[in-house]
Image 1 (spheres, rainbow, N blue to C red):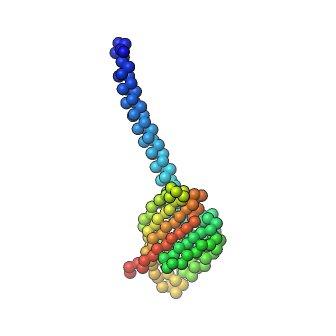
Image 2: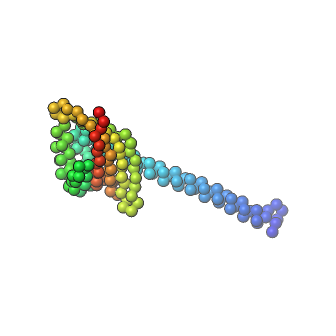
Image 3: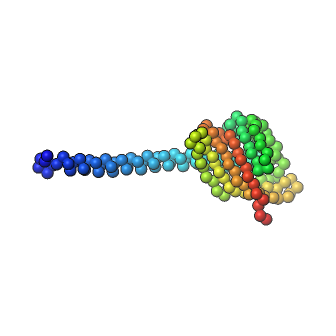
Length: 167
């Protein structure tokens, strides 16, 4: 079937090519939007962890209770586990931080991973913590921390693994 220069076959071929190009463009746009949303979420979680670290360093917790779920699990490298309310957690953190003259947490690397089965997000962090006690004795440890956020964006768990830092 041709009418002048027009053929149904060539028209269908051109439409197929155009639809293929359009599909690729739409896929790239969707991926870009998804990647931007994932990057934004990563920033939110990393920022919360950074702010909680600063609160610990300065021992000022007044504005951070909302960052934690009602019940929180903290797991320390010595095997100690706290499954406690956020109020009790903040009280304990304030007490233990008060035993130090200064504290400085520095993250060297962080990644955010998502658990598609639960909707939870994890911030996995590697760094160092340096402190001095009230007698002026300084010390430090290497840290690997896993911060778990529930689907509401609140911290529900922290796993802390430590190793003595080299002097």
